Amino acid sequence: MSQFDDGSFFSATLAPVDGPGPALVCGERSPQGVSAAVTGNTEPDITPAGAFRVYVSDRAIGAPGAHLQTRDDVLLVAGDSGFRLHGLRWNEMFSTWEVDLPANDPAFAAIAGQERFELRSDRGSDMVSALGFDAALEQLAGYCATMFTSVGLPWPQQQAAAVAGAMRRAAEADIRRGCNGPARWSAAAMKPAQIDGDGAEDIVLDWREVSCSTGKARPFCGAAMCSADLYLSALYPGRRQPEKMLAQGVRIQPLDNGKDAVALGSALATCQQAGTGGGCETLWYWAGTGLMRLR
Image (cartoon, rainbow, N blue to C red; front, side, top):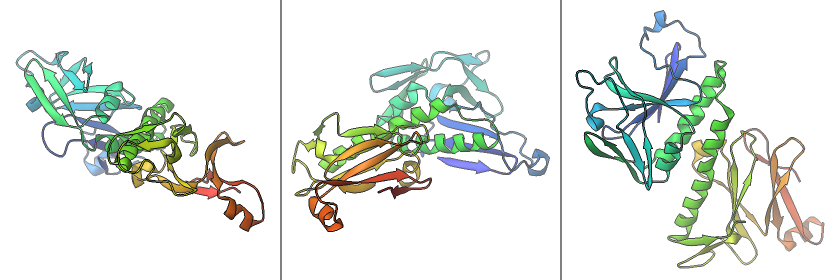
């Protein structure tokens, strides 16, 4: 994912490192408000709020021909799902095919779960690597939403929910990496919450509810405590790592401000040292830029 802002217009682009695969772009006027006459930027990418413009190279699906300026023959295949790119139009200025798709289009979610996807057309088939697409899509959506909102064009709220699925996918991927292979987990393993309040689903992964199929069954659990990993959508695109804590138990605590806190059970010895006696827990909440202990 790359981004650009010359003062008159901004844009962000998600594109394959190699090959003619499709690129996703968003763009609008810059919040800096510099005139295009100053920057000389007379060919900016202007896209709708809450949508990405998909550019597809003619090297992947063929040139337009003498009379073919729009087409419906291109199918994007990811796993077992196929998505037809209706209304692809030829952009003579950039010499590429293009179509605008909602940022929460199911095709993007399907690509994110694969190692590669395919573009099928009357010209034939073209395979494209999807490695890194998931992380780059989160970065793209976050940047586009921030920049569009800053110029008075709010990114539709439902787009945050679309990005939210990435937290669950990230947790599932970390389970398989942590187990070094297959694993089983209960419905209580991944607890959905609204911790950072950005509208996207956050996930709290409770490793007590995970059982690895090979090696140690619970590699992230000690004699009393297990790891509790917090996947926060507001932080994850930049850090690419969850917030890691230890707990005897995990639950989600609704707060009066509409957000959720995470309640982590502490060991009995810790409670006794604090003079509370019996069982106890700590409560963590979102303080704008990170987590803070409420009690």
